Image 1: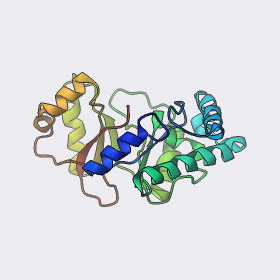
Image 2: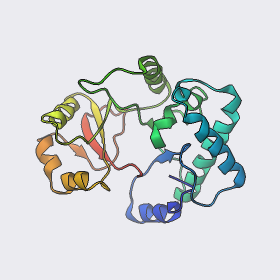
Image 3: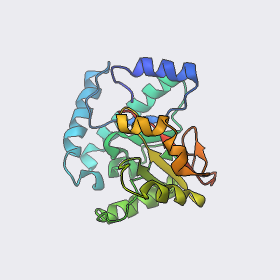
Image 4: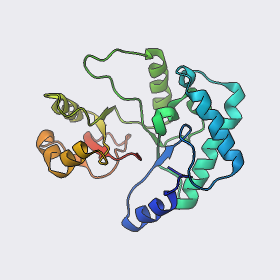
Amino acid sequence: MVFMQDSERAAKIAQQRGICVGLHLNFTTPFSGSCSAKLSDKQHKLGAYLRWSAARAIFHPGLAECFEYVVKAQMDEFQRLYRESPSRVDGHHHVHLCANVLLGGLLEAGVVVRPHFSYERGEKHVHTVYRAVTRFLLKRRYRATDYLFSLTPLEQPGRLEGIFALSDNSVVEVETHPIEPEEYQFLTSGEIFRVAGGIPIASGPAIPGYRQPGVTTVTPTP
């Protein structure tokens, strides 16, 4: 995330340690770092709009300039901090997939964009049309993994084994939050390797387009 209180320090650490990072677009949580009043006001306006449950699926022409301004500001700030454009993009509360961003073409073509979470057994298929349109747009203009799952819940028998098995023929991303004690223990104790068996786990982000099946675990900004 950029324009946050610790963004500068995080960028320096990532560069010093050679950590591969992407841009975590933020429309919904107020910027806590230094930014212009104009940018703060426009982000606040978008945050208020996106709290409406249907807002993500509807293109709002009246806010098109606002979305463009806030996205460009974050892209430019990422470029300043990391001296390169982001090669992959995801979003706080997943709003990088809202209609104004995708239909507005606000992300550079060819970048890796995190898709919606994949449905799991027993889940209700909500917003099916919106998800279908999103998948079409991602395949047409960007690159995305075949599946995206959350590491939790960990207690459900066979769940992770089934998710990891998908990587025999697909690129699977598993989102993790090591700040959570349960997830940290699972990742650092080696339990993830026991569950994965012989399935390769990438040390960095999945790069769709190379079509190399496998699982990657990533750490989004809390």
